[in-house]
Amino acid sequence: MKEESDFKMIAKTIFGLEEILSQELQRLGAKDVEIHNRAVSFKGDKGFMYKANLCLRTALRVLVPFATFKVTDEKSLYNGMQTINWEEYLEVSDTIAIDTVLSTDLFTHSQYISQKAKDAIVDQFRVKFDARPSVDLDKPTIRVSLHIHNDVCTVSLDSSGESLHKRGYRDKTNLAPINEVLAAGLVLLTGWDKRTNFIDPMCGSGTILIEAALIANNIPPGYYREEYGFERWKKFRPFDEELWNTIFDAAVNKITNHEQKILGGEISPNVAKKAKENIKNAKVDDVVSIKNVDMKDFEVPLGRGVVIINPPYGERMVKDNIDALYKMMGDTFKKNFSGYDCWILSSNMEAFKQVGLRPSRKITLFNGQLECRFMKFEMYAGTKKIHKLEGRSGSGERNL
Ligand SMILES: C[S@@+](CC[C@H](N)C(=O)[O-])C[C@H]1O[C@@H](n2cnc3c(N)ncnc32)[C@H](O)[C@@H]1O
Image 1 (spheres, rainbow, N blue to C red):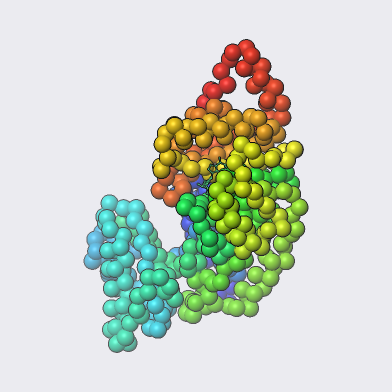
Image 2: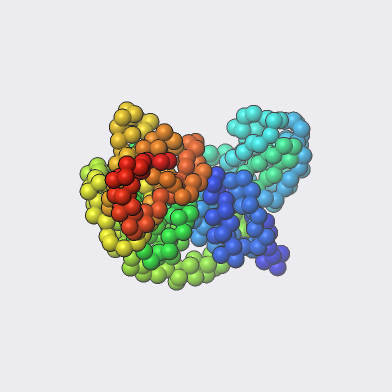
């Protein structure tokens, strides 16, 4: 019966998506939801842990904390790890990996701390059983997570295993694919109502379009994944296959058939081809269509909708070209996208100025290590007329 009760979990995410993740958790039925930096904590039972892994679009991992202790130095870390009875979590035959996140002045090298923690675990097994679990950094049976914040070390098991952004539908990538968790977060941040059009006119490998299609059709993001960490748990919250099947079937039964247009454009023929393959892999080719076309020639359906662009940021481009690209985006919004809410994600603040429109929202997000802004430009139907008038009276349109 103990297994059935609620326990604390921590869903990790990308900076800037915490609020969206907490909304996802509330909708799924999580209890005691609290927002932290790049994470949201909550409570639920084992079935909810399965559901969170399967259904959360903006979580990278779901951790289950089970021990905390004070640390002052390496020795206290080793001793703290040894106070845990590791037999309750691992078998000698298991392989382990330890991920460490440091937000403390006490230690500087997370990998070194992972090694020290691993020593404490294997030493305990060696003394008791004269045998030890071995380390497998790529595909361990059990993934242990350490978070040291100031002088408190929290030890968790990682119920996800591989990061949840690895959905399993993308095997063809271009040079700069966006993380699937970030892509889903962008779509959710726009508040797209799933009934109006959705367009990514610089779609690259198609990640944003695929995540939009999953959202529109209520397809759980974990639908394509082959496995999760919790499936390998034998001792701590052991895997309950029947419960997992019930949770999976319930989520799959909620899949709907979305009929609104989800459209992509991409200037490079090779990249457009890869995007089409990814869309097929994700089995959303009935709702998403891609054209190999320059954004300025993209045929925009009449009506309303949401546009998200993750353009090149310009690291590998000369300044004049990147400026011209961002100016083209602004001009094309004005010319062809009236009625649309147009969003751009970029780390290039100078280039943003070339868009020449005033953003109505600016959200700070991280794309990998790059600090970005996700800016919204509302192209009201009739904007064109206003701009024409402004142009005639000589007043500036480019007023970022
Ligand atoms: C940063 S990548 C987008 C990555 C994409 N979000 C993904 O997940 O793969 C930018 C893409 O814009 C495309 N692009 C650049 N200029 C374009 C234009 N004028 N029209 C259409 N696509 C363009 C590039 O070829 C590139 O694939």
